Image (cartoon, rainbow, N blue to C red; front, side, top):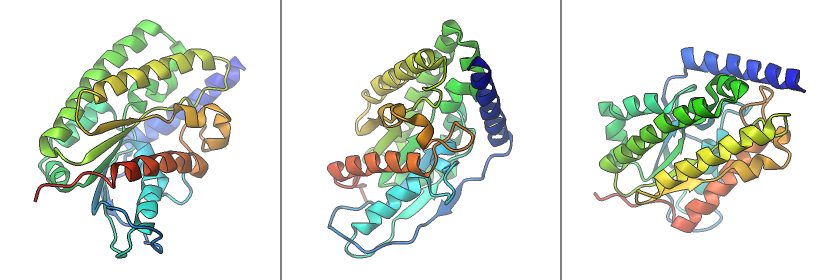
Length: 258
């Protein structure tokens, strides 16, 4: 079992390294609209930020949770108006790299026009291609977490600086190694990581920490892509469903000051 754990982490490391050094460029994307089913205050502009989960790595159709959320929201728009989607996520991105991206002039322009912001970040900080969890050194992971939490607070501050009204949904981490021999240890790290991240989010208005750990906890392998790290289409569906329910409760996101 220990050998299996090491092999899986090794494969995850190859995937993340490929993403780190050959990142997909940020792009504007749109998705086909469907028949509307009910009225809601649908956001007109959605900005997606973060890493490979926001990019949709592991989904054969390439939609990921972002594409599924857009489809679901457009279904509920009676006017048939499409949502303008700007996906600036980069595979392999860390919290430090996201800070640099948010300081770019064009990125700040996009921030100001967003009605809704979706974000995944932190997985590459914690897992580091699986290396930090191979070592399972609490002191090292604690040091990584300390840097990440400082970065996360700066990320949230930048988002609020350039857009005070759009609701930001920060998607938490699941544990892809839950069912392996070291699962109880890795899960402890992931749960604490999510808790501390949520505490940072609570300091800012309209930044919502979205849990995903519980979605993958029962039968995690059913919801993972073949790399045993990223979600598959079913895993992304779980995340999207939770997000849509929260967005609906919020009334479709924030309203910008014109």
